[in-house]
Length: 87
Image (cartoon, rainbow, N blue to C red; front, side, top):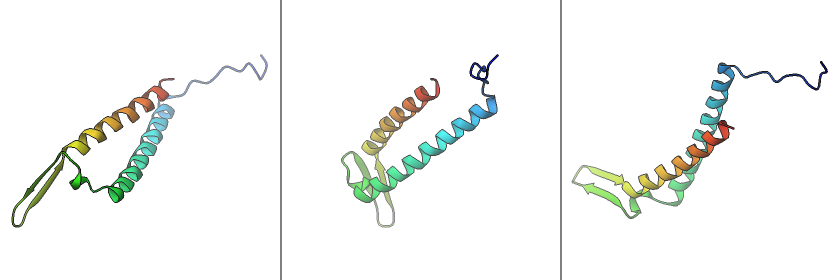
């Protein structure tokens, strides 16, 4: 058996889990950076679809539209990552 036809070693479960954790970490860092940039450019409280409840000493802001958009974007990103892992 020559060196070039060496059978590929299967990854252990620990190695696969480690890779998944690295990918999740990279995705979290990337989404955190995007979130920081977006919040500096756009105030989420001023977007359409935002519920604002204000009283004398209380303020509640619920960005519904921004939550839906964020959910769609994260779903697309996670689908891409999962498809890359399954190859």
